Length: 167
Image 1 (cartoon, rainbow, N blue to C red):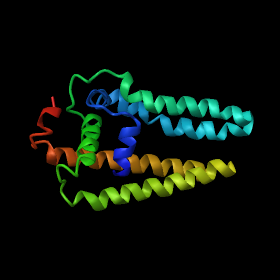
Image 2: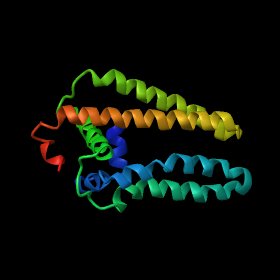
Image 3: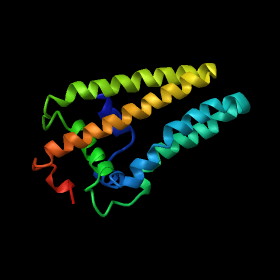
């Protein structure tokens, strides 16, 4: 099982939840998650162990987010296609994807990993510049990843398994 498949399983991403997650409100509001989690990490300076409360609330938000919004009226938009592309990416064992996407996705994952480690170091040491720099890298990496998922979906949307996802 791949890392992405484990995450989807952890989040209990059924077909219905995936459909709701294609709502652009779900995608765009989810961008608030990491800055809020970073803020919760920094709040330990003021609140001590009570900082686990806002951190827990953010984690709850991350889990609830794909479930809170209704299925969108249309998936003909960048955010929805990004989510659909993630589903295609996660399904690549059953339906192979074009190989030219792999190196770019590896780079986006590297940016995310370096950004995450830098941000985490900033949170642990309460150093502002690495926190903000790492946070920026993660947001940049995630946005580039979503954009690549849009491209992937555009190339794969004619496949019988995916053609009904666009409406």
